[in-house]
Structures are given as structure tokens and as C-alpha cells.
Image (tube, rainbow, N blue to C red; front, side, top):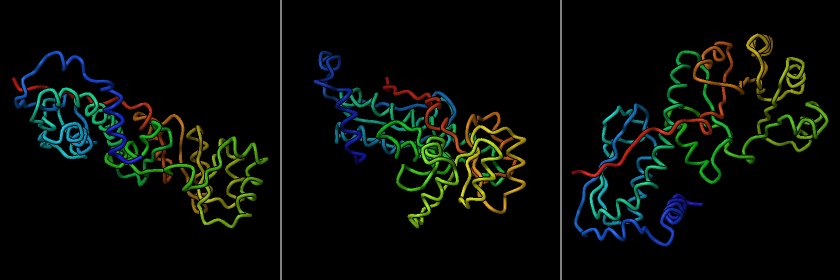
Length: 273
């Protein structure tokens, strides 16, 4: 689905058979001016997308961006100016804000967590725990915040998780089955204990995801095998503990919280009086 299709379907979902509130106000078709204003500190993501929402609803609207994606905002900062028919601005308002607030929320939490990693050499990755059909947008917001994308879907990296391993009969058996296909895809294996890590290393996988392992075991795994395999930490990662995990020396930390537990950035649209 293209971005334009997503925007149009989102507008259709909100408008339905028509905006009855605005319709019955009988507003004069004169130009109005409105601003989207930040009410909290954060990182903007989705500014151009929000602009397109207004333009797709009414191509005569004039939208001026005061902030671009990646810019930091503080309370009372103006993000964009919209000028045109008041009814059109009102009808596009919620859809535009829904995209802008959510993507900015993802970019903001990502930026805060990336800042915690400064100087460690560890990269922050997202996951596939995204909103259906909005994955590309949400992963874009992660990049805006300074994070990196893990695999985009089931098609661009082989990841053997707990249920794959159980179905195949163990880590070694699973890797052997994959290797029969002589594929060039990187292979990552999820491990939950040091014995599984040793088995995965022996199977010559490319990366090991240390899933919900304690710091002591993570340090032991990295110290013993850091020259043989890449390490990624996942599970229970937060702004409060991410630095402690990064100090273990792993190359990657992945967090589903970036796209499923973020707080939308507080933004409002206000008409000029």
C-alpha cells in the first residue's frame, strides 16, 4: 500500500459519509489560519506526511512547515502553519495529528535511548512489533530518532526463535536444516541461556539474540565468544537500563518498546483568533 493510499483510507475512516459537525456549522468559505503547536519536548517525525494529509483533503490548503523531521521541539514551538478553508482544516486535523503525534512519539523515545548509548558503540534496533500496515512509517520514525532498523519482515533475514527451534528439534538441527539450502541470508538465533549460546556458536550462526538473559550471563557470553559471533540483547529494555546492557559490549540492542510502548508527542492544532 502506498503512502497516498494509507492517507486516503485514513481520511475515509474518519470522514465516513461526511463531517456532520462542520457541515451544520455553515462556516463561511473564507481563509482561516491554524498552527500545529508542540505542548511537550520531543523530536518531530511525520511532518511531511501531515502536510500531505491536509493537501490530499484539500489541494487549495497552503501548508508551511516550520520544523522538519528530526528537529527537536519545545513546548509552544510552532511545527506548521495551515491556511485555507476552515472546514477543510477541521476535517484533516485529527488524521494529520494522529500520524504526526505517533511518529514523533516513536522518534522521541528512540532519540532518548540512543542518547543513553553514546560512546558505547552499541546500535539500537527496532523490531517487528509494529502497527499492521504502518510498519514502514514506524520504522522510518525510528531512523529519524537515530535508531536502526532490524529486519523489515520475515523475508529479509533468517531468525530462529524459540518456536522455530522447538519445531526443528533444537538449535543445531534448525541451523542444519537452513544450511541445506545454501542461502546467503544471515542467520540469527534466539538464545535464553549460556548452554544455548554455546550450541549456537558451534553451529556457526552469524548473530545471537540474548533474550531476557541477566547481565552476568550476558557478560560471560560476550567475553567468551565476542570474536566469533555478533550479539544482540532483547527483552525488557528500557530507558533506565539500556546503558547497563550496552556496557556488556554487545553490538546491538533491540527494543519492541520503540514501536509498541511509546508515548505520543503532545501536539495540538489551534486556529488563529
